Amino acid sequence: MTDAGSRDTQDRQEKTGILPWLDARLPVVSAFRREYVDYRTPRNLNGLWNFGAILTVVLLVMLATGIFLAINYTPTAAGAFASIEAIERQVPSGWLLRSIHVTGASMFLAALYIHLFRGLYYGSYKAPREMLWLTGLVLLAMVMFTAFAGYVLPWGQMSYWGADVAGKAVDAVPVVGPWLEHFLQGGDAPGDVSLHRFFILHMVLAFAVLGVVGVHVAALHVTGSNNPLGIEPTGPRDTVPFHPYYTSKDALGLILFALLFAVVVFFLPNVVFEAENFRPANPLHTPADIEPEWYFLPFYGILQSVPSKFGGLLASVGAILVLFLVPWLDRSPIRSARFRPLYRVGMGVLVVCFILLGFVGRHHAQGGWMIAGRIAVVYYFAHFLVLLPLSARWERGVVLPESIAGGRGA
Image (tube, rainbow, N blue to C red; front, top):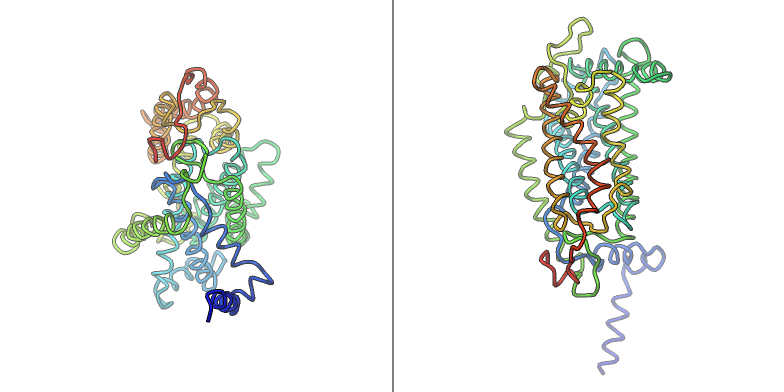
């Protein structure tokens, strides 16, 4: 048989089978290959870019375990706590799936904060990636609402009083506050109606997050990934195919993250479980210290550092809303903080202030923590509203690498 005949036979064999048949009618296989195999990616992405894949996998794990928990959960004030106990003690492997779900919530928010920091540090919000940044912030807000609604569902002491404190905070909003509180709680205090609404909100938002993740990934594939140098690829030498280079790198990151995840699930469960929440909700007994989960503590610290209840609520919500303005507040043409010494120092101070606000929330902004909290709040907003717009004036004359391949971040 001639070489030409052999090639024709091979081509016909490659075009037979279920995948070529499907791809000819619904090109999902070729689309997957184009977007996740042959997709060109900057060659210098570091480990901080692993967290996108980590967040996706953890989200899928959360959805899978959440469906199982919802099947066995009773969304009533009389039955919620008992159903959680039944999952833990009677349902086969129920304790494990619940532990994975609760640990996943904390690990997901931790990874999301790191993902957000990476975007701020390397300027991933700058043109042409504004939509990528905005969809990511929408995801952050949705995940926070979903996490809070899930925190209420066990109907333990902290769950009940957390819902009560949130309702009173919302009530401070002028005009619409009382209506919002009544809508969430269904009455003057948390009960059957509020628990049912939080359950529906938790489930609906969880799947809505999955949909917005799809939009976020689509925005990423339209503009391409940013990179540690903050410069666009100029040729084939600046990029590599996503597979096998970044699939293997993401796989390693996922393995390391899974090991940390397993350590928390099996050896450090008290890190993610609140001891007070193992007691059933009691409207007649207020816990000595009412505080949210650790991932809300910085915003809780902002809330408590501001003297006015409405002012504190406005500041804590504003701490997230101001992030939506970052692409337009930052006027510097330079993306990466590697080439912005002043901004790099400012980012370090911002991280310290954010962590400090978490400790302020933990200590209820009392004594010296009140002063520290107010200083941290002032700097947090000054970083975005003052430092970002003015930093471009001190960042002139910076010479950027001509290409990723020839840069220091390659």
